[in-house]
Image (cartoon, rainbow over all chains, first blue to last red; front, top):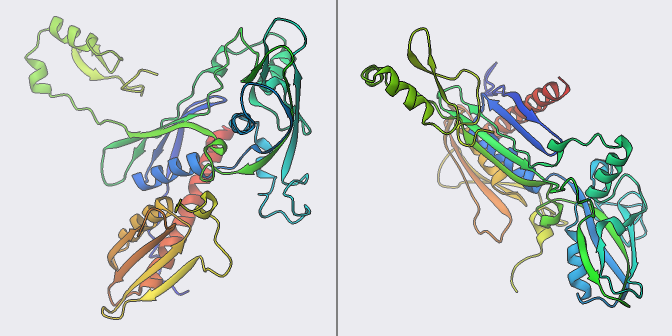
Length: 288
Length: 111
């Protein structure tokens, strides 16, 4: 393909600056590109990043109060650690398995066997009861509990919170700032409660035995494969202070004006007694 | 009842081309590209990139129906370029821009 003229490339060079990065939360600024790129990133993060989730459930025994497909649906929604997803193949593309879509390259097998013994206590069947054939792919809270056990008490209280990624875009043409917030899947694990995600409750005598196959998929196919909890982006606001009007206020009025904002956006410079914008960027709307 | 299966959104069936091209018979230097099994994610980003080319007089995309998973991009150019050329250039530039975005992320993450 011949180019129309030498050097006729309309490529931009986006810049990224990460503000916060945790296990399940990230906030970053994106500059020198436009909203379509930020939106495409957002759409891809929600719908097209591949993960692993339970897709096929064979139930041997189910005498619980929930019916088979109800339990299968709940199993599908359990988040699994998907670091191995990039190496796996989609089961429709896999040629190594003999047509049933479950070989070692494209699927992971799980087993669950629970029977409520003859006691009066209700047995809660949780994701901790899911036994995986591949230790790399397991329910997320199992992995978390395992990590906690390994580190034996060095629990990071921030790791369980929801994370937000804010992407700020600054275009070349306009000084308006854009920001993108992305909230990745939150584990919602409370420090004292590591029982796992509840699947079903069993009464005395009820039993649940099944075999599940987890496959790679994307959010477009079914929301269980979506890795993101929320992904948002917003333009960073461009705040300009009307200096003329500001000069008409007394020092006390300026101080109360600065303090009236719920998040610290302005500060009163003690030397010049002027209201200036806080230099370190924070989130202007919810102070995180 | 009439809704297609969910995997139809991204699986191109056998025999269908992913991208097809139709010249406009009535206007010179005008053409439509039909991309199968794609949506706004690709459509909007290619359209915005086409707008940045001064040789492109008109660039727009639409999804003819939300249950038909394809996009139609229409491009008119000046006589100095052709729709296929403009489209190729836009896609190549986007490719490079996304590569540089990926590198920028990787630099950020390793820091």
